[in-house]
Length: 89
Image 1 (tube, rainbow, N blue to C red):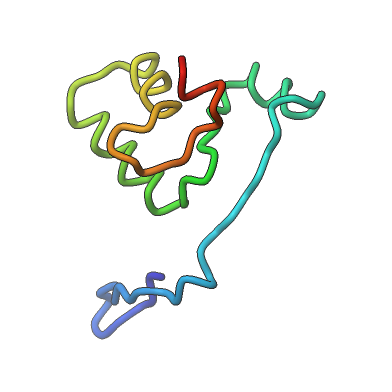
Image 2 (cartoon, rainbow, N blue to C red):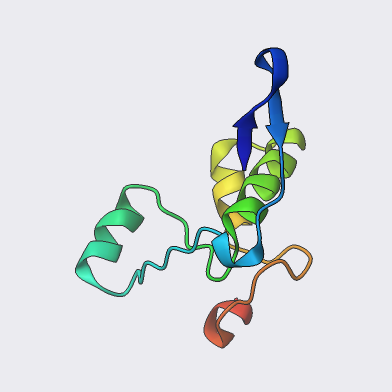
């Protein structure tokens, strides 16, 4: 969480685990298909914090947007749990 601090600085503080942003979108249904066509990549159980960190890491490697999109859908180091069908891919 970022809160205004003294003299215009931002004071970064950690949040309790219960306040982590959780969003679930099933790409199997009509809305999910539309979001997939719009560019949504499923993060499965990836937290928002882990997704942001992963994006920063992937772009820092000089990958283009298509490569980043592909790598976001894969578990690089156990950061997300993939369904069995996807993990075999």
